[in-house]
Image (cartoon, rainbow, N blue to C red; front, top):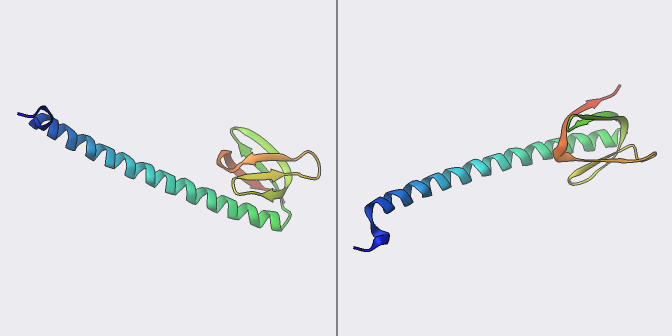
Length: 100
């Protein structure tokens, strides 16, 4: 009998393939959620930039601002470009507070 065709190995291969497919599905779902979150956050920040709104951003437990939204890139936010600008990656933003 071929060692690679052993019944135990066939069962193990099926089990591992099923686990791999499930892991890939979960990773794809997580990537879709992260992409949607980033896209929605970026759209909000673009609106705030158009209105020259001052915001306070919390990223990684650090509060930044209040400062005007100066620019919004594909993956980052620039606050307060009139002074020393602060660049914040979108993925690191936990909270955006709009200042009145």
